[in-house]
Length: 117
Image (cartoon, rainbow, N blue to C red):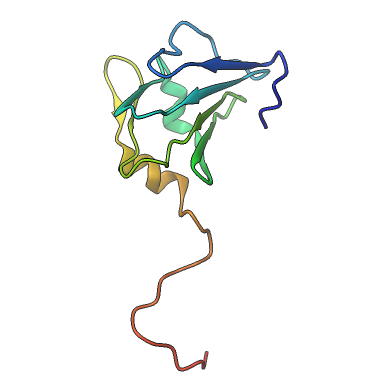
């Protein structure tokens, strides 16, 4: 949870987090803005992280306690790609799949329901 304490690091849109070392005692908070790519710097740990959709925000939690919150990540039509250093990126549709549905446990039904289960 981002509580505004001195353990939170805010990164402005267009600014890279690559100059910061993410530790288990801080959460990096970024704004997605209208970016098509969000640069997470050298963040290889993200490839083994948990992705959690929180309304329009994306929370990425690493195995060693690293945390990145990207505000309004899902607010755009197509979520931006996550750049993970010079060699790799996760495309927005892949991140959306990893983060799960907007309304977990709810599914669309094709056709009409007769009310029986």
